[in-house]
Length: 171
Image: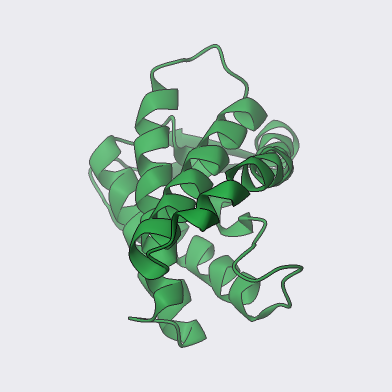
């Protein structure tokens, strides 16, 4: 097990985790998707790893930097895809704030909730602002089911990494 030690006074860890998340996000953007706009959310794994250990402001910057890095290098910056990603990341951030307060939830359960909330905000944005058609709201049930699956996958991977491979210390 590798032990990574970060100083809370030195904010370089924000860029460390954001760069990893951005690189994973870039790879996830260029890989073929089973359905349009549907991604597993592997770029959220670094965020899940540190979400209970760093303050909300630093977590917000990790998410924001990840968003811009992955979309810039994928060529999606300032496109409808970027707007959906921005909406999903803001939804995920709100969900992160909520699940941080509930310490008894396991990491996979927290990840499912975050994934659901992210996909819900994206679907609402897509229906109301991009399509301007409420018919798209009928997909919420399907999207919710996918959120459980993708959230479970990313949460389980993050759990295994924390349990078996890495230990983070913030001093």
